[in-house]
Amino acid sequence: MTAYLFEPAPPTSLQIEGDRRRFPVHRVYCVARNYAAHAREMGRDPEREPPFFFSKPADAVVPGGGRIPYPGATGELHHEVELVVALGSGGADVAAHDALGLVHGYAVGVDLTRRDLQSEAKAAGRPWDTAKGFDRSAPVGVLAPAARVGHPRAGSIALDVNGEPRQRGDLAEMIWSVPEVIAHLSHFYRLAPGDLIFTGTPAGVSALAPGDRVDACIADLPSLDLAIT
Ligand code: MN
Image (cartoon, rainbow, N blue to C red):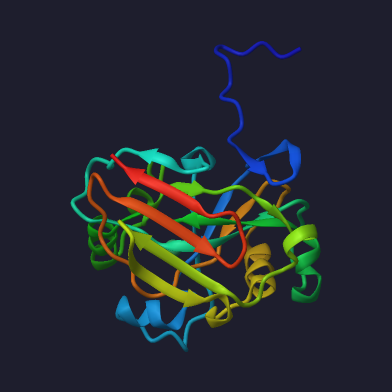
């Protein structure tokens, strides 16, 4: 048995609907600008670019959401509601027509973003890590198995703050579909069981403040609620 200098951190894990076992998180990948209206609100032409990716640490995931302290080092914390794909198996150079075979299920996630730091990073040509990969930046709801919900290609994706609508879209508006996202991503990384993929956000991103209540809903997936404290 291996002796460690200190106890390794336990894996981050998600509750699975209808399953007493939990889903252990391996890596967290994110797609940028995957809805045309959001790409436009960020000042980009959505039609020209192949998908590109960034990542968050696995321990940035907040299983089930709940109370999230307003993070330091920002005055512009933004919400991005996203369909999260949870992989039950992996592979490299996966063909799009095989990609859904890797998916265990789907969840609602919020890609919390320090927009001010991201804007500075973009302007300076620097990495996005401090803007995207900070502690508690990836709340994710209960995982719904594809065996129950299928592979949603359309359906509403919405986020409210204090009961007011902020983000409204439809999964059918994704520029790159879930199978295409998995195929592209698998050319850059060998995907593994436990990987999560945030698939991009529709238009309407905006700033959060301490005291805000956030309700995120996608089609008939379990919803995700946050309280920014
Ligand atoms: Mn995002």
